[in-house]
Length: 124
Image (cartoon, rainbow, N blue to C red; front, side, top):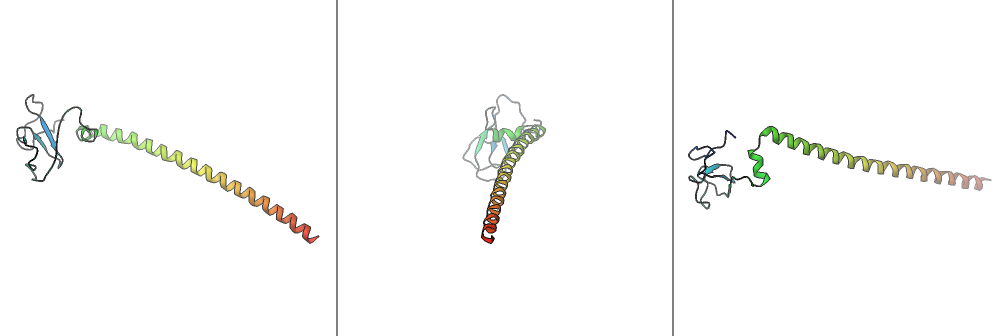
C-alpha cells in the first residue's frame, strides 16, 4: 500500500510509534495529527467518526485497503454466486409454471371431451 499516508503531515507507514486513523469522511491521519476524536476533520472540517487502522478492522473498512484486482476477483466470485442462485430459482419457477400449464391443459382437454360426450348424448 504505497499510497497510505497521513493527510496532515504526509508520514507513511510503517512507523512503530505512529498509528493511523481513518475518518468517516474518507481521510487518513496519523495519531499525532488527529489525536482528539471529538474534533471535526482537520482536512474538510466535517463532523466525523474515526476508526484506527489495525489488522482486525471490519471487512467493510478492510476493503478500502485491498488490492483492487483482489477486490474485483472477490466481487466477481460473489456475482457469479448471485447469478447461479437466481438462475436456479428462475429455472425452478419456470418448471413449476410449465407443469401447472400442462395440468390445466389436461384438465381443459378432459373437460372438453366430457362436454362433447354430453352434447352427443343430448343430440341423440
